Image (cartoon, rainbow, N blue to C red; front, side, top):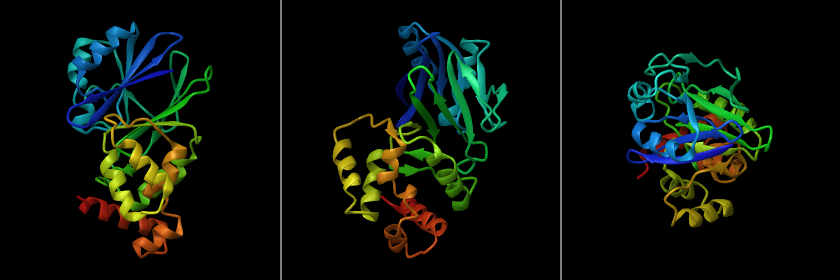
Amino acid sequence: MKIIPIGVLEDNYSYILIDEKSKEAAVIDPVEPIKILNVISQTGAKLSSVLITHHHWDHAGGNIELVAKKPGLAVYGADARIPEINYVCKDREEFKLGSLDIAPLHTPCHTKGHVCYYVSDSVTNEKAVFTGDTLFVGGIGKFFEGDARDMYRILFHVITKLPDDTWVYCGHEYTRNNLKFALTVEPQNEALMAKWAWCQDKSITVPSTIAQEKMYNPFLRVNEQALQIFAGKNDPVETLATLRELKDAFR
């Protein structure tokens, strides 16, 4: 598989996913269609599918224009609020992009219809997950239509159950701010300090991996005693809720 990150709007990411065997392509959250189509035209791939993580305009807002320019596209998602949706994803019901297997993972919290897309390549054994606004590098999304218990289930029963070497492609470039907050939580975390140093001269910080996120993302470490002591809680869900509240107020 080939994945091309494209910076859009102020700090969003769209992605082009290409099956190199069939040259079939999908786009993930293509909010700026012209920019996306220009890049695809340079790859020689044929666009067939649109994968939308959630209905927010900065992810799904380009659908109408894209479908008008490229009629017949399959538009995947799990929320009726997504413009032009014509394939409703069921949780873990796989579909294909050429030879690639794609499993939609329902992750309702940021929005009730949020989906992460797990992609596996049986030829190269590469794995990737497009996490939208559920998981970021060093952080997580806000709980607009869910709560801490929903997010805990997503993080520990869905996301971290993926193979450790899964590449993580998130929906926003929030890395520096996320890691800056994480350092207030775990200032002695060596993996976190190394990631913070690494990202300073990077304009694009995707992808990370599931294994990496487990080492420095505080929201994936709420079962650790140090995090619970910091939050003043002895329950991981309450710790997660406290960290989210603190992050919401963090500047």
